[in-house]
Amino acid sequence: MASRSNSQSLKGLRESPLGRRVSMDYKLTPIKLACKEESVDFDWDGTFADLTRGFTEEFTEVECPKTLTLLDSNTECRRAASRVFRLCLRDGPFYEGGSLAFEGFDPEEVREGDTITVNFEMYNKLLDTLEDVKKRLIQEKLKKAEKAERAKAAAERRKQAGSLTRMQSLRDLGQRSMKNLSMKVGSFDLRNMYDKKGGSLDLSPDEYAKLGFKQKVWYTLEEPTSSMKAALIATFMSTLIFFSTVTFCVATLHGVYREDQPRDSFWFISEAFCVSVFTMELAVRLWACPERWRFFENYLNVIDGVAILPFWIETIMFAATGSDTEVPGLSVLRVIRMVRVLRLLKMSKGSVMLFAETMQKSFRPLNMLFMILAVVIIVASALMYFIERGRYNFKMQYWERPVAYRCAVYLTSTAAMGASPTYQAGEGNDCSLISVAADQLSAGFLCTYPYRKNLNCVTVYEQSPFNSIMHSFWWSWVSMCTVGYGDVNPATILGKTFGMIVVVVGVLVIALPVTVIGSNFSVGFNKEEADREMAEKKLLVDERRRLAEEAALMRESLSGSETSSPNFSRLQSLNDDGDSPAVPNRA
Image (tube, rainbow, N blue to C red; front, top):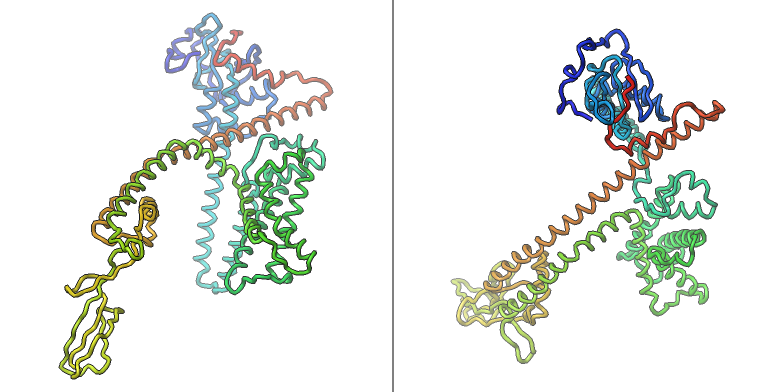
């Protein structure tokens, strides 16, 4: 095969007696359209659309695309078509395999008697390109129509703004909102909320129709994406799980919580309803499971059983004793009911697997992160312990540090202060009265200051939060992770300076491995998206092949005999030769 950019012009390759170009404006050009070892005479109108139509009708079982006009009007489609067809000149150059084929030729350069061959692999890509361009054009058309509709509606609103009342405006707004909502609801597919499991549960409609009743029940409950009915059941169960979790939490609020909840209360009835539905669902799934002995190997099924167990134990004890007898350890089982919220992971199982895969690939950077954190935390805790521990109290057996100073303050006045004068050393810092002079013109107070006001001040100590290196671990961990709860903090200037250094070191230590983890997540997410797109393309190709086979069977049943056109599957043999352009020259 020769490309136009690497070969001589077609004008130079033709002999002069055949140099007259056949005009395509007023009559058809007789050519030969070749597929593998076969060729047919074809009157071509000079367009890629006509070539594609002729090839589709003569050599394939595929229905003729309805978007052939895009091959002449759309640049992308025309470029794709130029890769499908190859031109063999009637009197062009030859080599051992046959005549030389040119790819990317201009339709106007084709003359009477030339042969055009087809690359089926590129033909299949051409169909995909036509479909993609068609969808894009439809979306653009819809966007233009929607934009025009909005502009028209805006103009109409401006025109009627003077005459419409507020109630009419609200009514129109509600109607438009309901119309937009109905359109969005109509295009919403509930199955897109769930991840497709695939594997043994990935069945075609024909395979699903062959299943028995029990197998269909199992498939419906295990694969929410299999049908709209399955998606509705999964959504109902997820909503019920969320509702039961919310009621379980709200029932512990002050004013709502009761130790012995009445059995006619809303909280007990809602809990009984939810647990009953969960029990029925678990029983049906256990009944429909093809391999019951492997049913509880799935951790989600174990969670389902553990979540409903405490309620039934309480119910059985109440029925046996007639009262709410406290069973030892049952309070712990009640907390286990919260594990049912883990069933919501079914809605995004693919996300959980992606997170687990990312953590698995990031084991080395995570190991490095925790190793460095451990070393830095031990060093920082030891240094902060020696900086902030203060003095040792031998009587109480702990370290203590100064927090304030109690200083005596003496005040004088030109007027009598009274028998019980008051004084504040700052807002909200009341001082205690020590003494008052007999003439009440002077008084002494004992005040608390954060600094040493004079030499007579008495230091106030408290137990140091950095009482040991082990106690300092909490401050180091919180500071390095840049959380900073503020429950433990240094008091000295040296301690605060060292604390700033620890925070900066923590940011640097955490930031470096986190970038690797983020990169691994991006790689896994992109791979998952590529696999999903590949699966969608495979389904599209399988559907197209199935429709072609159904059309062939229908034609055979109508004609009563086999069709004269070759089978569609033989075109796949074109892929065996790859890009070989060898076609016998039958001109």
